[in-house]
Image 1 (cartoon, helix red, strand yellow):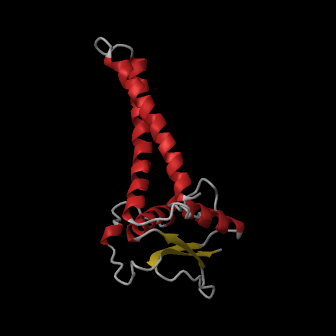
Image 2 (spheres, rainbow, N blue to C red; image 1 turned 90 degrees about the vertical axis):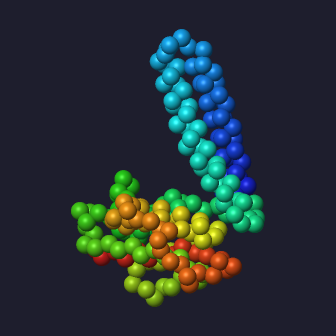
Image 3 (tube, helix red, strand yellow; image 1 turned 180 degrees about the vertical axis):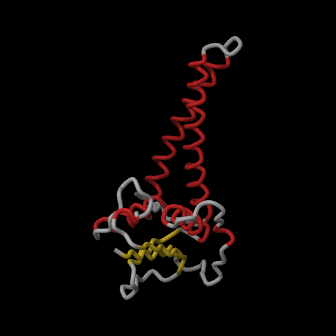
Length: 188
């Protein structure tokens, strides 16, 4: 999916949920007291959907305006990266159930390690012990967001209290292409 396709998709969703929220707001604006609670429930549902889609749409707009992007370039998200890593590990025979975030030690895995970083080097090193993945990111901000997402998904304890903004990426040249690098090592 390209940035243009993603923008079009999100804009159509944004337009749809904005209209639904407006209609739900109109329905509750003429109620006496609290009126029909079914209308209030519909309003709250429309409000939640609007906030969810609006956040995604605003995030994409932030990416698009933060760097001069080519609309036909490929759009890559953290959840897409995570899905590629998980599917590749499953294809390699790693016992990793679909409902699990990480390989389970109950499923035959003796040990599991995931190292995440940012680099300007897009070359995959086949000589390391684990499996290395690299994905291009738009800029350092997008790299930090993908880093944060992958840390929450792939590393135990990578969520609570973890702030990617506290990490220093002094060795990253922002003028060059930036990649997020994930090394997964699994002991069976």
